[in-house]
Length: 202
Image 1 (cartoon, helix red, strand yellow):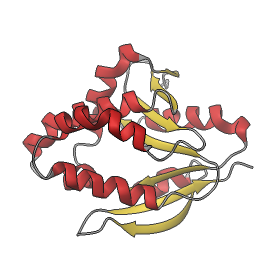
Image 2: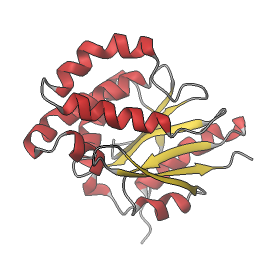
Image 3: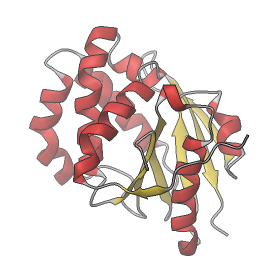
């Protein structure tokens, strides 16, 4: 019996809460979010707020996709928009502080963000900023379909696509989508290890 994979659609503001909640579940045990929020109670509380802000930020920088039913979503940043600009940082400072809390989580989040920016490739590329699938729906091809839908949409640009992942098990998943491993690196001060991957645009 073949499972039918739902269509992938553009995500709008009405999808914000459900996508943020789903991504919080998908990243609940992610090494990067565990580094930022070591306490699981704080992590469960803070992640939906954080992903809501990331969802907002990617509205004007690329595209946001979600599968029908909301089981998987991808957030993309377009060419030249992969790094967070100073203006974006200023505009999001107060909402980000509210999302992160007054503890040391903000400092750890900035360390992760700065390390990620430092390892972005040179030149023009599409950036797969975030990709997640609800843990209850994994293993059905839904997450893969959500990523592939984005790849199909940017194919006409003939630009490479870049991503990083802190999960070594994801390397095989992305290789199956045409990505090649390009670097391995670690966030300073005992932060998580990441793997950078690039997919040719030609």
